[in-house]
Length: 221
Image 1: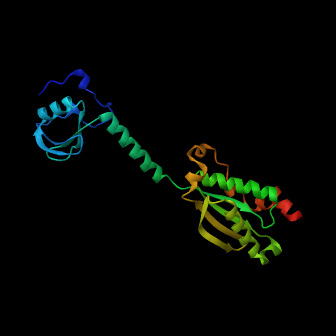
Image 2: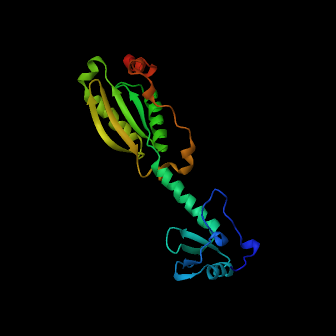
Image 3: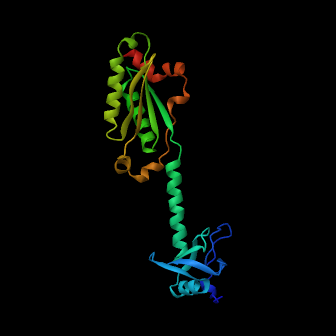
């Protein structure tokens, strides 16, 4: 085999099973050039020589082929690009969280603004938000108040949300499912995604939520 200078021996970490340069121990390989051109089947010595002359690595990209397919490229750059692709794939596979925010039909202005702020932060974290209006007693006779409140919230979010499930009443509750819009990144910027998300209302039992301070102020009104 052609002797390879030490500076050319850029071995990948032990946990990396990719074979490069002199670690490719086969007599012949199918070679792809740096620009993607097909160079055909060549002797391994010839492939290593071409890689050395181009100051690139000979990287095995399809070890299962006969002969193995190799390519001339900068291995460090290639590895970085592969890691970025895997990172993006994992990002798209992340489980979508569904948060829940509970409101009363007569919620006080201050409490409404607080709840709206929570919804905004959930959406900025790419979470979906289930917004639930809780009716009590005679409030159930006026479901339009719940729908109006949900519509107001959607409009006040200023383009951050899309309605994934229209308002639907089940018993004493009316719920609407919001998802982050495609414009979220443009509106809030990537840097704001690091802001900690608030705790949602889902962990608060319905009976306890009915006795929360915002509901008390609602009853007063």
